[in-house]
Length: 120
Image (cartoon, rainbow, N blue to C red; front, side, top):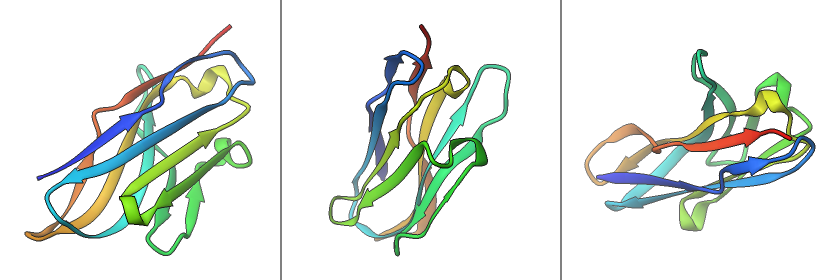
């Protein structure tokens, strides 16, 4: 079994920055195809924030373009989300996602979520 362990959430003032991390661990991971960050605000559906492929291609939700940067460390099966110029509307629970193959099968995994609150 694979676990995605997130860290880095918290409370920050508008205009501030946070860096989220997510490390995949557990069973032997053969290949991670896509790693991504989703978020879910109260009363709203979960939405994709940013994604990155094994080759480094990225895509972002329109509202975070120019403010957030996704990156990954393939050697350590870790993905990061650098969030700058944070706004109150960025407040949400942020979830890590990975589409990967271990020694058994290919499937998708989710982290437990980390709260990001942007407030003065």
